[in-house]
Length: 55
Image 1 (cartoon, rainbow, N blue to C red):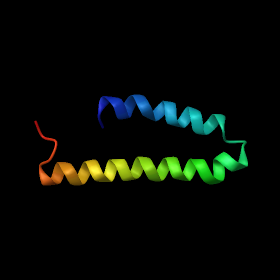
Image 2: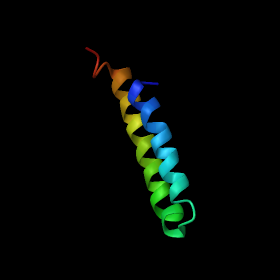
Image 3: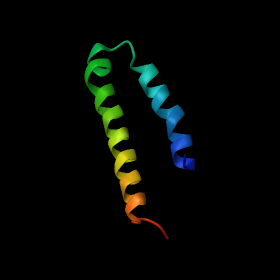
Image 4: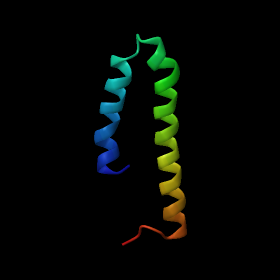
């Protein structure tokens, strides 16, 4: 886990908790956010395995 991931996690959880009562957000926006975060993480993982992004 990087420092930005540790800092972003409570923010994301807070936003999800804040909008939890809204059916539009909970059914549409929340899965999109989660899929986006997983996709970003997956792309970063693949890039690290290929040696991209190593300084």
